[in-house]
Image (cartoon, rainbow, N blue to C red; front, top):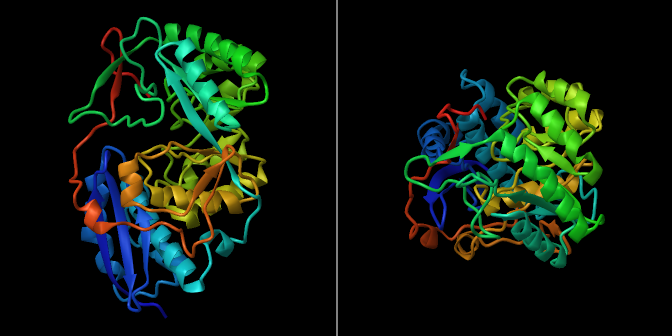
Length: 403
């Protein structure tokens, strides 16, 4: 049995903060797991270092499912983003170890490939419709088959989800939370114009996606979905806060535009009713925030019964360790839909050298044993943690917005 003899928590900030768990076995084989929770990174680092790592020492690294159940059921206080991100890091690191010991990439341990590669979508955004369409056209020329389009809203100083940089976007942007002002009616007017312009320039052979960022009520989301139907969106993401899963019934009554949700979900219980009642078309839970590869497979299996496909979150707050884990998962599951892909900065890629590749609008995790990602600890130590918060939204009258 490959006994766990040590585990360390590595916090680094090569342009943004990452938390990585490194589990080491007695024969020197180690595995990596991503534990990054954007804007709350040190909470997970402490949870791991103070409460989880001591429980791992001496355990058999091969017993992935048993360790998952131990950490989930044994903590008494179940679920939540901090707990599930910590469990995800352990789970992912153990899959990495198992792959290395077997001499196989993780996707082979998950049943092998269900497809040749993984379709990904890029982020095209700009302050205006024209800027966004120009960036989207650039993505199309690079071979992307799916593109998320977002643009600034006229009359608003800033819009969450719209970056000043067309490739590298980090929403956690300040030492204290930035406050954005929001106007729903202006937003509802601009998005159909954006899709109309995008279709005129990009044509119909590219998938167009849009993220609402939980900023609409169900009936507003239904109206937007109906307005966009002539332009055939691939999906509308996070239309409304999903704590009330019944809200998606109202959206479904008013539009046939596909719906995606779940990047902030932590467990199968957050999405069970949405999936079983077929209120969504894509589930966006991700490896790091939904309990790791083991638990995300359970979510995908449930979704497969109801013809719901996966569309995992893949923003830059997920380290290359998580990106690789997502690609192994994506390649293996039969009901894969699409994978979000926001490329990391050169500094991040240097800290986390990896085997996954991009070509022709798709990615592949590579054939290296395990996840195919490493960490340069000496380089990581040169980038100290830098506190950063995600923005918050207020309506124009100062009311805190419910998103």
